[in-house]
Length: 180
Image (cartoon, rainbow, N blue to C red; front, side):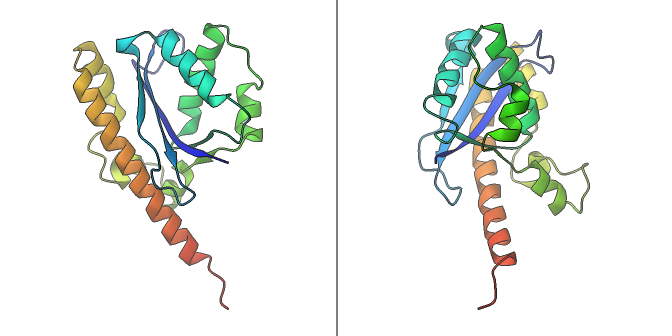
């Protein structure tokens, strides 16, 4: 059972007309700490089709337990990925609904909402961690061909996510410790 931080960056919010411009993932240990290098598949160095195919092979390499996504707001990312899997005619073992409900998947979005007094507004990763910006800057960087800024954003977001995951792990573990 291997967990991976997973995120994507996109050219916009329309799954039919906007491209996935990066797919990034990093292996995590059982405590949610990084245990492998951050891998960034970059559309600007190859193509959307190529990075989607590379990720598809990683996601479905063996079985659903060999790549367990750990994400924030998984519905957005997975909806984009499944649309692109279909666009490039990649055979799917699962529909998106089946994957979301049957495959192992961890989404910290709901924990952030709870930590924000059950308020959706203000519960974004950029508002709950040291993440410097939200994803709305990515299409601007992409249009301006500022790929280094996209990579900096991705690295900051990954570090912020993993730090947040560690805090959630610690707090929840303590909260649910049984008295002995």
